[in-house]
Image (tube, rainbow, N blue to C red; front, side):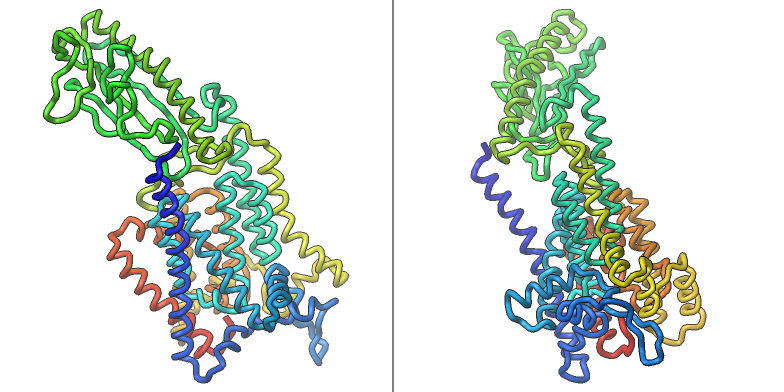
Length: 569
């Protein structure tokens, strides 16, 4: 059982990972409103928050979907509410029915609440993949990016981001059914939900592969914690005897230590040094782990060199540089080559494997079950927590070998059904399976041209652009591509990388209003990882100054676009 102190720290860490992102999100929304109030030429701030696509969402929530195509007075096909996926307007209508708020206020409220949920889930995802500082930086960057204005408006970006972040988090934890339902909801909220569904399919394939790989390894198939003990006796006089205990654990493990006992018998914290008369290796008289909870599911590597210089009664003298293991027996300094010394070392290793290894395996498994009440999945952790460049994740997505294969497969199938289901429903409602694409093209000029329009826009803006908004958006699009490349070079968790790349391709690969593209990239997430990792490694004061500067510019920029700029975002 864990101590009260450990429980207090755990509860404090969890509460801070909710309070911090919520505080950052609330502060960003208040600053955004302050900019809007100061820059708006009139007092119609609420109307601006419901402008453009927000009006379509409100009409769908209030009146429902049209029954077919819509034409103007000249008989020309125009866009209508069928272009908008149902997830967000359904929640707006539900909130209206529960709270009796008007539809416009309900739309803004849903966006604000969903944005708060997105902030918390992004922080949790960043913390799980990297660490707490990266999680908070990722949340802050999401809240203050140039088009984070959409998080305050009657748009679906906030809800979609919350669903995608929740889906990725559940997939990484192995909660497959929850991940599938969240992926389905994302697919019914925005067309880029297809990218989220494909990312979940990638996570499912990884989980199945990892589970089968572990099931083929006999030494890792016996517990939620995969522990392995190995003794490597050496024939050389000065060789080390190495004992490895591998444990894959969730975040928050008590000990991640490397203990090495040198010829003087010294050992650093968390390790085991020497061997006692009973053949058990330990830093304390009982052979236990110094400074570590025996039940802690942590990865520990203990390397103990047979110690010399034992006195006649088998006790080694204290070394000023460290603490020597008690009752360490050896013949004389430098007598490693002695046959009796080798026998004692071999017995110590066997004793450690037979007694300490089995005891710690049993206690670790039972302790974990007592703390969690259920078996936890084992996750592969190549390289541990990442360092520079947004490297590999702290733990790769996967399930235990006992997790049924059908769960990740079912989750992926459920998520993949979202976008096709709505497109099919629109086609059947209108009488043309291509109806949704026709409406998108007629109303917003949206067609997939493999990036030709985006290329032409960037080229024209940089060579002939006569407005700073046009030029700034061109540089933003260039920056997103650079950040995506940096993220991929940093070995981001594959499902997150797949999701971000597909979103980037869908946004940059389609024609449409160029000034809408930064908003469409708000849920991309992948492009925020490299700066978040860099800020997580920076000094707190430096990170705070950079985030403050980004916040001032990003929140002002979004406010400018819906108050001074005369075109839709």
